[in-house]
View 1 (cartoon, rainbow, N blue to C red):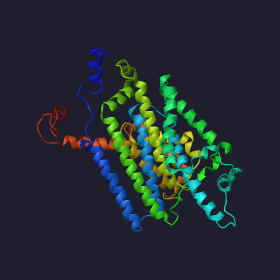
View 2: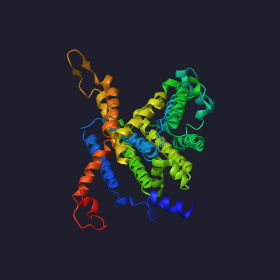
View 3: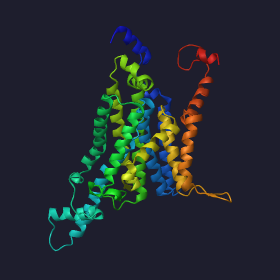
Length: 423
């Protein structure tokens, strides 16, 4: 890179002295972590007091997992400009990976208990056949597929929940980015790949029980005596810790030079490439890392949901993920979390019978039927009238606080700036 190009690149990407700002100095990180801790602690206390149901605690836990997926989507779309319409597939793959261990271990325990009452001890082959009949009998088979070879190992399945989405994203991204597929063509390509995966999962002979999916995941092996009310709190805290770590990692990623390059790619990819940056490597790193984050979120989500099936990986799910980020405000980490949380909780309220139906006399509005219409209208309204999304409300509040700062016009922290004086 020439000196002129280097100087231009430094100016474009944040200046020669630009570097990662300490996370402790970022108000949004501190506020987010405090808010997350507050919600988790209050939900725990209310659950222990019997003021909220176990299903509501599970809803909160699942919502936190969806917020992790939304954070990942915001990194890849809001900060890098890659509109992936297949990221929720990685979420589902993580669920399938942990679901295989949950089903295998739980079924193995039931089979061993049953065979222990037989007059003769069962052989390993008989045990495997009995497990296979229990799991795959629903699709007319008793053979254990090769895909389930390591299903009995929790460490390996946890590793698969992270590594398999990462490997798929790495291969797909390498092929797409090196070919410089961008824009709507890349979006269509990710959606086509997701559709192909979901169609394969719907087949009964794929080794994953086809349309039946994996069920009974809320029953954790070895914890049969632990009530669901306790397990739901454990998963709530696990999901909260995972979201906190994901937010810290995402904030660290976008706060330094790496984040500046990502924004540059989003705004003007050709210019960033001209400045000498290997755009494909940056895009591939973000695409792969966010896929792995979605895998972790899925592994936490589906034990709380109790079931995972191919419908979870259908392209429409990834479109919903993009809608959540758009409603919350893409390019803002807290906006992605707000969007996912608001839509998730609102969806449960409208479709779960919480919202009363409206009788207009000539027609009765049933929110279970109209929720998707309301969600679509919200997306259109945000796109047209509030492109910053719900996160824009936070921006307005912080801007007003900045206007009320007192001090001189110096460059120190908390001082009034010249442009503020002129307002």
